[in-house]
Length: 187
Image 1 (cartoon, rainbow, N blue to C red):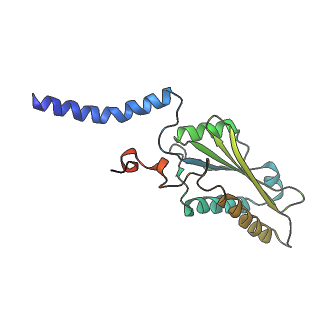
Image 2 (tube, helix red, strand yellow):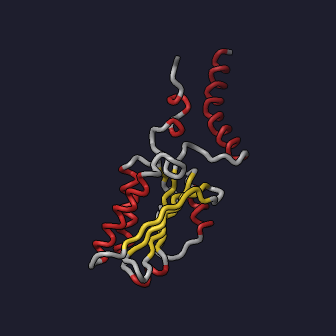
Image 3 (cartoon, helix red, strand yellow):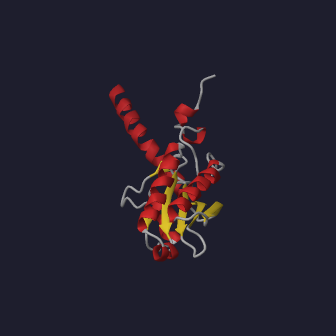
């Protein structure tokens, strides 16, 4: 008889996390810890007036900045989608973020206006599509685009520094990102 109870406990231990996740999903609550899905979009203006290498430099830099500052990021496990060099609707990007079990979307748009070397807009959204905050920076000074890119990235880092740990940029190891058992401390 004792073996039946042990078996039942083992089965319950495996089912409870799944049932809890299903209940969260039915209640409209996000699954898992506070995480962000990063997606970088290249604008039509950037495609027309700048190089793909500049765009990819921004993609790599923003990703490295977020990882280096311990932002809790998730990956698109299905298709590895992290950026697009052609228009992709925000609704599609939000679907990818949901499929990745993220709680937030960090949507970065790289643009090349006629009067600037580069312009980057960063918007944090919840999964319902509500914009939580936005930061924008650009650079039009200097003699070369490389200088403008470097200046813009420095400015972008300073803007994002102020948002670290807030909605849209949750940090690894903060209480909301720790497993429940690890977050509870004995008295």
